[in-house]
Length: 269
Image 1 (cartoon, one colour):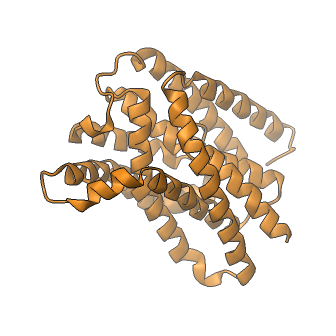
Image 2 (image 1 turned 90 degrees about the vertical axis):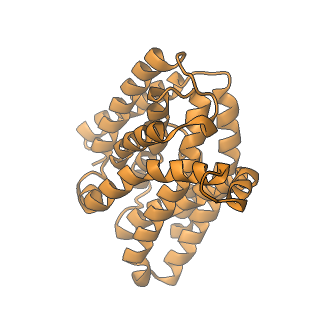
Image 3 (image 1 turned 120 degrees about the vertical axis):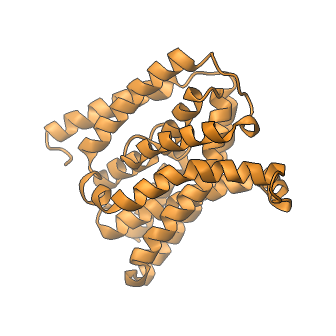
């Protein structure tokens, strides 16, 4: 029962943070340390339940996704959309395959997450101040292949726990000339193949060693993250039409500094 409660808590954390530019992985690591949800299963769990949140995006954009898949002939709108997503997917996929073992072994700690939260916050503030009002693209469908690749390169930053996949791709989108909302929507679509790939890789590595209770915990976390994320996606997009990203940056700074203090005091490690 204790494991299922922890899975429920982690599912809520994932659903709340996956699409906000504050790092879902970083928050899962931090919360996992506090509730003593760590180890090999916890690492896999944190990756897999992200797919639950991604399925919330699939459900939210189901009409657009269905319409894009009805006609995938070269040159069609649907083909162009997924081709650009594929181009953006490649950089992080390749580098992630080459570095995932090192990242899991050395970078999943509160201190490294804190550093990434702070660094990402500073980047968010600078990029929004510099490029936030200079956008030329207000619709993700207008993104070309070159800009897709730039966003994909930016997504590589998210391989460092605490940087945030959402923050990395939104910043990449702003650098490429997208409005914040268009960059966020592109980020949501890019999350679909990215997280499917990450989840598949993680399950292939560890599913055979899972107990029945662990499968149940995974199901609880998965469903909880899906339902929570479904609520967050709509609210976040509505927020971006009227507000700045800076509150998220300030939040990252506060959490990052707090985590460094906790690590320094050996409260967490």
